[in-house]
Length: 120
Image (tube, rainbow, N blue to C red; front, side):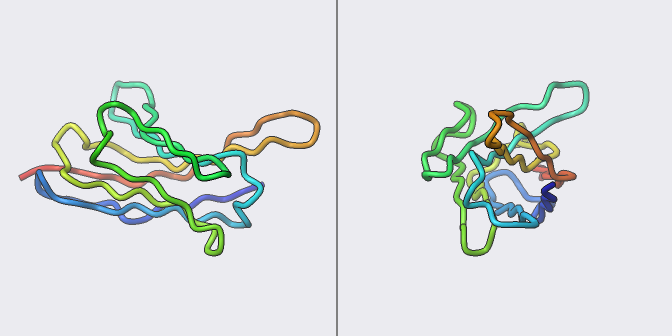
C-alpha cells in the first residue's frame, strides 16, 4: 500500500506560477511511473504530465512548455512546476503512482488532490 499526499495548491493570478508536490509514504525508486492528473466538475480526470522511473517525461499538449514534472528519489517526492498559469488550468490536481508487481499486475494509487485556482 502507498499513501500519496499532495501540497502546494492555492489561488494564483493568470500568468503566475505554482509548484505542487506529492510525497509518497515509501520509496518511489521501484515505482513504474508517477503522474499528475487534474479534474474539474463534470469532466473526466485529465492526464497532465508523467514521469517514468528512468526520468522520461510526457505532457498534455495544453501544458507543454509551461509545466515541468520532476521526481526526487531521495525524498520520495514528485513535483510539478506550473508557470504561465491560465484560468483554464483551474482544477483539482491529483498525484498518481503506478506500480507493476512481480506477478505482472499494475496498481494505481492516488492522492487526495490539491486545488489550483487561477483567477484575477
